[in-house]
Image (cartoon, rainbow, N blue to C red; front, top):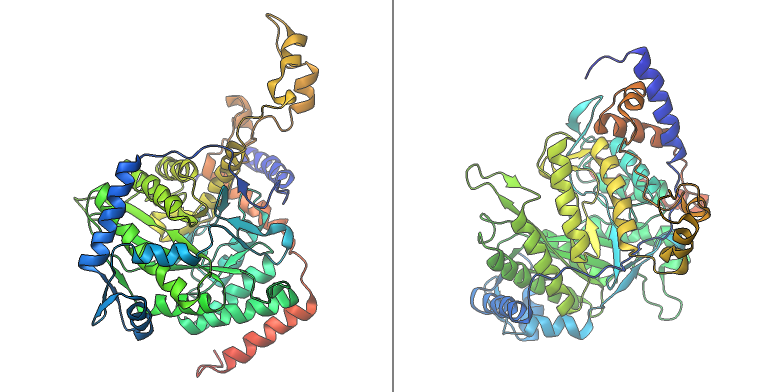
Length: 519
C-alpha cells in the first residue's frame, strides 16, 4: 500500500468524520419484510420431479446417521427401515413428519425485544459470515482469528443497520482452547450486542452451555408466559456431511437444541461435482433429501421445535478442484431450493456475499454481488454469510465486512418495493416543475431528498478532483477507514449487571471443571 502523504491524511480525516456521522445504529426495522415477489425458476412439473427424485433417494439410497443410535431408534419407531447406520425412508414419510409439526414461521427473540426477528414467511434476516479460521485487514494482512477479532466483528454487526443478527462463529478465536472458546464466543454475542445470535454446535455439551447461558441472559423472558415453554432465543447451524451422512456431533447438538425448543438450520454443505452431481437438478434433489431427513429428526426429537431448510451449494473448478462462487449453476440451485422450501412450508436459509477472492477486490465484489442478489430474489429467510466472507470462507475480512454491510442496506431498500402512495406518485412535483425544468428546487424534492435514494457508506460518487483531494482512496481503503471509525465510536448495549455477573460466574465455574482449568 502506498505511503500516506499529508494530503491523504487530511482526506482520511474527512472520510473518518463522514464515517462517524453515518455510523449510527439507526435501523428502520429489526428485519426485512419483503414487498418484492420471489424469482421462481421451476414450474409445477419441475418441482414435482425433484421432490419425487428426493423421495427415491431417501427410499433407495437412504441416509447414514453415524454413531448416534437415538436417531436410528426414532426413525425405526416412525416407520423407516434401519440397516446398520443406514436409514431408508418410505416415500413421503419425512415430508409428513415435518408438515405435521414444524412451524411455518417463528420468532427468534433478542435480548432487546425491539430487535427480535421473524424467520420465515415474507421476512428476510441478514446475518454475518460464519466459521472462518482466519481474519484479514489492510494493515495486518491475513492471520489467525483471535477473541479480540471475534468481539470486533460482533460490535461491527451490532452497529450495522443493514444486518439484523449477530451471527455465530463470526471467526474462530484460535488463541483460546477449542474446548472452552465457545463460552467466550457466546458471552461476546450477549454482552457486546443485543441482536439475536447463534449457538455452538461443535459438541452436544457446548450446545447445552449455550442454552444455559441464554437462560441466564433472558431470565424471566426465557419462558413464554402463556405456554410455559421456552421461547426461541438461539438458532444454530447443523450441517449434513454431504453426500447423505449426518455425524454424531451435528446430531447431538441438534438434539440438545430441539429438546430445549431452540431453532436448528439443517443445511447440506455441497460443492457440486465432489459432494453432489454436477447437474443442477441432481444437486437440488440430493439437497432436498438430506434436508428432509435432518428436519424430520428434529421434529421426532421435539415436535414443533423450529427448524429451517438450509442449503450451502457451490460449484467447483473441474480443472483444479477449487470451489467457485458467484457462478450461474449455484444460483439456479438456490432458486430451486427456495421454491422447494416454500412448498414444504418451512423457512429457508442460504448464503449471501460469497466469493473466492483473496482480497476485497473486483472479483470479491462481483462474486459477492451475484450471490447476494440471488439470495435476495430467491426469498431467502435467513441469509447467512451476508457480510465479511473472503477466500471461500477461510477468511473474515474487516474491509469486505463493511462493503457487504453496505450492500445489505441496499437489499433492505430494494425489498421495500415501489412506493405507490401519493408522495410516491409525485404528481405534484411534476405539475410544479413543468416541461423543460429541473426538479432540484421543487418542494417535493426538498421534502424527500434525505431519504429518496440509498446513500452508500463505501462508494465514492464525487468528481475525480474531489476524490483525489480526499486521498484518492479505493473502495477497500475507504472500508478500512469505515470499520476503524465504527469501532472507535462503539458503545455497548446496556445489560443488567446482575445478569452479566451471573454469566461470568457460570463461565468461570464451567471452565474450572475442565482438566486444563488454569489455561
